[in-house]
Length: 307
Ligand SMILES: [Zn+2]
Image (cartoon, rainbow, N blue to C red; front, top):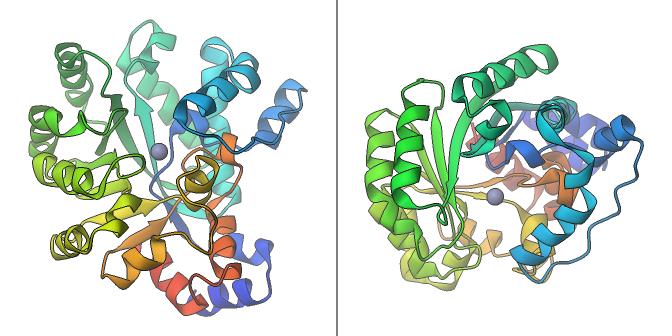
């Protein structure tokens, strides 16, 4: 596969790149679909997204251009279908996708029914994909509420990974919940170092005993934190286009993924919110290659490391 991957990069062939097995470890299930897929279904054109100043601007854009197209339970299921279809088209063979607590609202507040729907869609659309279901929650939800819901979800023994996102300063406080998930053998992740500092990345990783960090790019500003992440074998699941379109990074050329890699940190390349940013994992490999951030051999190593 190594030769095929390198040839695809050198020949600038997206079709060949799609045939090479890849992982996507940072993907939110309601936003993993391709715009064209949604457009074909509802007959409405979704515009290209602009560069956002922050998450608030992105959410506003999403509320205007995407949310109204995907209403209710049917819309929710279409999002999931689109996400699996996109992964299949892109040659993703290992797929982590997060379901955010609260999304069971579309299923009469039943986590069981939500899980059933995901399983059915996975089986119908892309049964060949190794799918790792991830449960995610927002830091803004009151802790007692989150804890109760998490218990309910974990008891079903379906989810194999956990993620948290929202206010990066609040992340380390969710230690107890992560401890529970760790005891159940889940992969532990958190969104950190996207808007926050390098120190917050280390704090989140240490307090929550994380295995992987979603983004974590701020760590590149601190040699000490990079050393710590490398020593503790903590992997960063990076999404280059997401970082650019959320004004975290100027362009691919200057993306800190290179610095993180050079400091011995295991990095992976992922899609984040395909429905908004419109760049697949395959395309992200081209983006980094064409910007001269990595050579083809290095990108293949990054691709393989994700498994
Ligand atoms: Zn994310």
